[in-house]
Picture 1 (cartoon, rainbow, N blue to C red):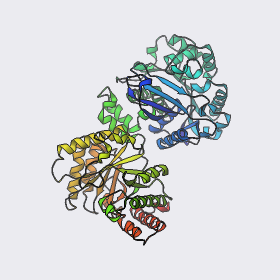
Picture 2: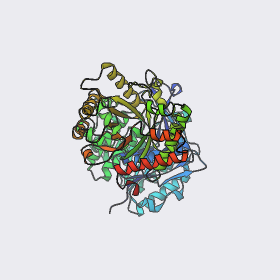
Picture 3: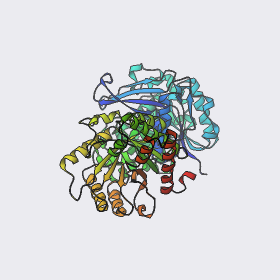
Length: 622
């Protein structure tokens, strides 16, 4: 019987603050990257990226960090019906870093945190029954209240015919066995922990852990003895992770040699960061197991996911998409330091998480020379840009995920900040808006370091003239390469608007320009094609893009009035963006008093919706 969900995980949900500097003490780290974390949260994200329908049961605080976790889970495609907002407690935090290949300082901030308030009431039988598998991680067996809730949920799952899995996930610190400064500790012997784990082992169909985790579950420092002790308590499939040696599976009696267990091929890669690698492994293992793969292939998938995870910064963000995993398994290891494998990293960037916006209708109200001439008073111009945002909000009422705004940082700074609060698609101009050339805004700095100040959901928009049959000048190439590298380091999507020398030569100019970008290693997420209908050689353009970057987000067509028709059939056109001077008639009418604030908002929204309806018939009626 087909079920709505493949997997439900339950337990920890935290915000990971990962030190940006590598090789020093946590005390010396000056900046941090923010990711979602917590073993079951990581597993839910990892399996969702691999194509499973995953859900998470947890609690988060009623504050910014809790909202961040919820939004990130939704963005990753994880079902959040089981995520409860706790108004009394804060979301858990973890502060961690990479010291070297063996030391990973980690501090947990989990005192009375939201996810440790999980109770019986959070374990909804109807939700659990929707899944094919229910996965528990060990931390929530450490507290009597959460242990009661977890055991109840596992029993519900078994009664409903749902398969059950345990990732031992032993963190001595979270069992009260190590001080706050020893968060990275992986093993401390404890009879209490062993007894607590052993009384639950018979509830699971799959038990997964490192050798040290099986030591704590089996009550012995000898791995084979520990596995044998666990086997006496459960008939579950046992999977023992062995670090660089891969993993072994036992579905019957434990033999006298670990190497006699079922194994899958491993991957020789540079170990950069082991934190979260086990969760990535578990995501791959569950995906193979629930997909009906044999154990050799299941362990191969799990090992590949673990290899990709140890090679990157962060936990959940490092996990592969299904497309990336298939690419990696087919091609193999080319560069042991996988984060320096440019081809692999492009696939990872472009497919994780899967692009969510398949249709876009964007209003460009950014500062330009024509708009500045129509509204020379900068205060009035800034006010008009605010009205443009209100118009986009009004147009987006029926389809909020479709509409967006392109704005600048000079006169439009207030509007930019306001747009970030509204959940719209937001593009931000990177060019010097009043320069006749295509120069990048000098306010970004000589090294473009100011991009680090831009919010993560902002899309960097850059207009570049198409070379007229000649190669890009060396200086321009060097600038573009540095700029796009800076944007990628700042985790910002990029959008390039190609401006042809003239419309007659537009078809050839676009194709030539796109090829030039790819030739020099510049891979924008979006292309904007500024043209009139019929001028672009779409099949040729699509062929170039498909050959070089088939995972790019898409193309937006730019013009005063564009229709979606057969001419785009061969290209990945996802929508349109208005020309820079499209708003000028509205600005002039508003400035002269012909349109009030309310009227200009209504007229802009009406016209934008009309263009959207022409490009996507019936969209606004759905």
